[in-house]
Image (cartoon, rainbow, N blue to C red; front, side, top):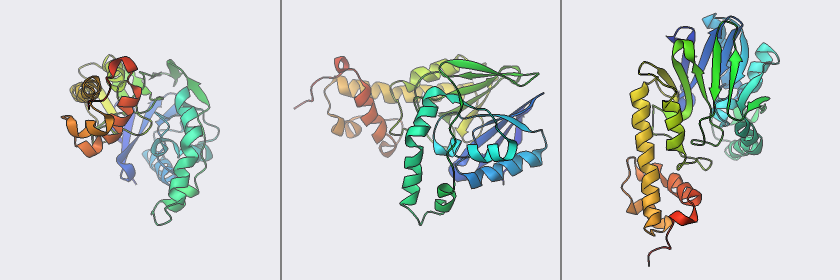
Length: 283
């Protein structure tokens, strides 16, 4: 159980212990928009109970900020609870969930001792059915909500949700507060800073920014995190341009976060750099 806290007018956030993930509700005349649905059918049933306990209305739309299972595996539960809800996501997020969702279940199937094993295995993956490439607007009656794909970063299909009249932006995992941003095998570390530049362009000094994980933050926090992600990207670029081999780059570089957090970022960054920005490895 988690409490939904109102962070702006008719915008509520609940922070769940498993993965420290945030689920957000945006209220409008038509009902509630749910942003992210948690990581299993069972976990989402807890979210549905918390939504009903809040008593702010019925859910009428769902948004997935990206494909990762801790943000999407509750989709089926919300449809069971509220009917054939439209589920919105970036087109890449839909494709990635289709491509990799079952692999997540396979990992849990291979770990029967995991306390969430049964929950994950009992979850039916439901793909978003309303996708877009750049931007779209959702109509909640008396409130418009904007979905914006700022570019690749945490995944290739990240989106942010902007509620203009409340000056709120839901940033998904492009921004994280409770730990440094997480670089996965599907992350784009060289693009991430540029995507955060687009996000910063959506913010005012007073904007409430809800990260995918952790407490709400402000524009200054996002700008600082953008600059730190930028340091990671530029360090990778510098090492590659000097001919440092990828298997030596992690030890050779000076990093803003612990090295063990950045191994995947370095590998992915080297993979994504054009050949013109790489020198032959130093001998």
